Image (cartoon, rainbow, N blue to C red; front, top):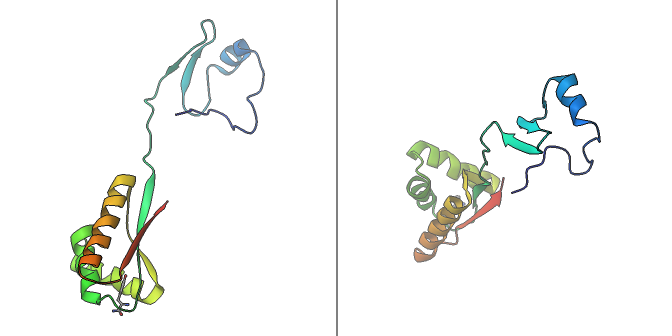
Length: 133
Ligand code: TYC
């Protein structure tokens, strides 16, 4: 993974490292690296944290899947309460699409597969998709 401390579109300004260290009293770049310009060593002072890529899982409306089936799927696959499941199902029914949750890639993918499998087994046309947030 590349770590960019400046905009890739504009290279960092060429200036004397000494000026930076003495004039500004240290490295003020976002990310908080300490730079030793004698040796060219850069030490990370904050641990590098990577945010996982998150995906929204969406249910799509159709004219045939029973409302009760959708509510049960939302309770079972997405761990929603009966009340939340009802609210989401009605939202999808009225608006055409609705969010069931936001998850890391593999969790989202597993939930989509579970919904599609159970819909197919029960011969309902219910569709579930995921999109990158
Ligand atoms: N529109 C369906 C009906 O009237 C109910 C439904 C809701 C279907 C949500 C799919 O994702 C869905 N029976």
